[in-house]
Length: 435
Image (tube, rainbow, N blue to C red; front, side, top):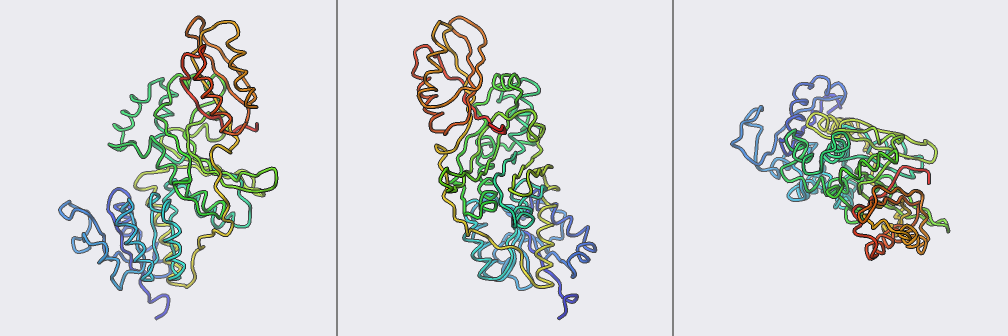
């Protein structure tokens, strides 16, 4: 059989917002996809959980048995869009072991089991593609794996969760509090009924694990990512940030940490942070995503666009599917997992960071010097101080220079024990500065 005679059979697992769009594009763009792949691409079936729901697809293509669909001899590529760990993990592993290439958008699964699945793909000499798992339609996985394969990536930082970015953007613009803005995000369809994965940073942490693994040729799992969510960010924090010419964003940061002795470690972390208004990520608002990559030779690169939604994510899925189909038709394989560096994971305690600390204090002589002394004792230099109000409930804001996170957190703990400090109301980190 020649390449032109071969037909590529595709099985789609899951028909939610993304799966429905993938199926639609497959059918609407069949002629174009055939030309791009070099052979016809045909949908063999779609696995769904509920057979009774009406679907815009021929009934004979629908099944509630994903394992049986994947096992069919006429399926060459499996597109997994079910989400979750199980049964997706077993279905994908079986598909790979059976010689079928896999395209997935499942960041939670990849953040835990990329190694297992990549090994199965390598052993079977098939492809495992996952561009859509991070930042929707924004191409960032393939540039890291291929375009920058000859460079040394130093840092990957981004806004990779649209729900939290919408919430923080609205809080900054309207002055509304977190609860009000979360409710608005739910009304507009940006927040799930249970928003925990988004607002507590789990979704962003899974994506950070994937990006760090690729960027630093080191296997990083979600458990390796330090994580904080946005639930404690207040309107006062956003107002104060503006006074420092900053805004607040939930950042996913993957960084090569270099020691004085030349040693290297990988830091992967997610938390809300102040960033200067001059930083490119500061202008990313609403439900949009953006990723900034800093490489030794390429310098700073920025990738921006829609990070979620049916059509944008389906675009990334179809891009991966075309690549996998071309490889099936013409021979060859996509890039394999690269973990040759195997760098150790840096604890958040060791990572140099800057802090923004907001506290309520009694405005009395000597209080500021007492506060400054706690930072000085731990070799943390203060960059700026701002006081608002007076009397027994003044607000004092301290912004530090860079120091190990452990020293910064010890300063905060000491402040909380001071008699002159009523409460430490907010602690955020400051990113995106040269200091």
